[in-house]
Image (cartoon, one colour):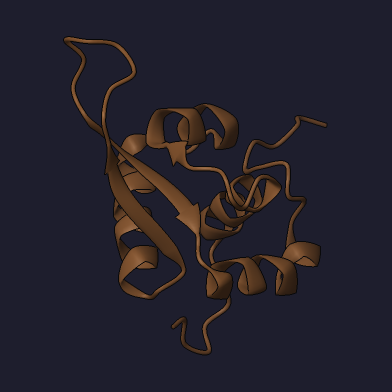
Length: 100
């Protein structure tokens, strides 16, 4: 589980993206496009959140022959609870900021 630390902006963005469709499996590339997080930020964060029991990951077989298998991610019940608890800290739409 997550300690007493406040979740980072990146974690809040990821929680927001995954909580929009909590029961759907999502691929990292789709999450990157939605949140604006770079792969060097997203994948280590997904691994940490998986270790903390907030996200579950599994290998998904390719939809088209010749394509590689890919990891897919979704929130666990604990992850969804954290997403709901922190929903007011940042909009659930993602990490991208709109210039003022």
